Length: 459
Image (cartoon, rainbow, N blue to C red):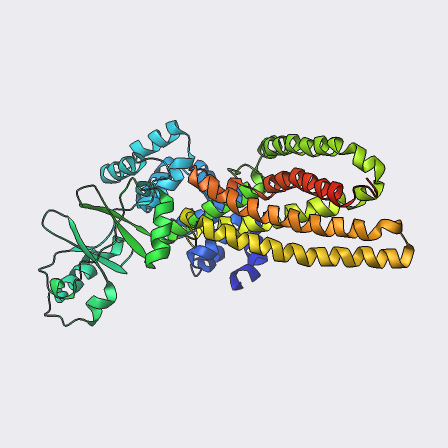
């Protein structure tokens, strides 16, 4: 917040080219604040500011930038500066950048890296897209079970600088097979003469590099860890992933789900950076599908054309009926999609969920029916708007509301579970999609109730 208050001063220093003062000022900032500043600057000013930063601060700041901003800076740098920067980056952050670059550009850049970093980069990029291997870093602290606590602490002081995190220390045998992961707190509190084996419990949670990144998100949530080890199929420790990288994955997954629930294909770039025609392409496909679906609503109305002609008053309540079904269905779908993503419910709970939602739909529908009946009654008393058969109309609307809302909650809760069972993303049962299904069904329920209750009177 304090940094943002002096943004105008930063812009002025750039304008008058007082780079000496600017360099001294920026050196006191933290990487996250500098990343926000660089994102706020014009492209030509970003390179100026970035080149004024001390080397280590520049590397840390670069890792906090969005991929698009990283690519812009790399284009503006000389090859030597870019190579230094990429060699010093965390392997997982560098992999995330390489994923967004054209394949040929990535190959060229990898060839400029140091042999060790080149090998690491090639290995990580060799894992499947969206796998744990792409998030992994080989920079961690591993110790042996026969070491003393003093030896471990001395080793950390000597080798801990390049480690991604020091919160967790990993115990491996002579073959580098993972035995345990231990919180640094245990080492700090244990007597110096004790051995690592004295504080081990061998209760280690680990991932495989081929696991899906969503699996890593679930593990971090379930076990409340700041880092998790990654082993190959034989148990050899090959890297770790940290919670900051998993948070980025969780954000991407949540964003994707939100887009799907709104019937929009996922955007590859921020909203303002997405080309206009690409934005249209992302939105129009689902809208066409939903439009075709809504045509069934017109078909349903045409089927009940005779009833509408005989009792025009029924048409007044069509928007009320179908919107109630769509809204209740969208609510249920949203609740279930979120519950499934958080692991609060599973597919095997479908019967309990169905019963719960039927009861919910019945109660909610009854409440809406009472409100609807009261509204018709007051309008009739005040304006005599519905004639002598107002009571039959009111009962038709009320019972139809109960049926439509129950249908909405049922289909809204079951469709995400069905999609999950079929290995599809439950978020695909978007609110507009549910609303379309409920619109058609709502009309059928409404006019079926009307035919039953208004027979020999209005119909």
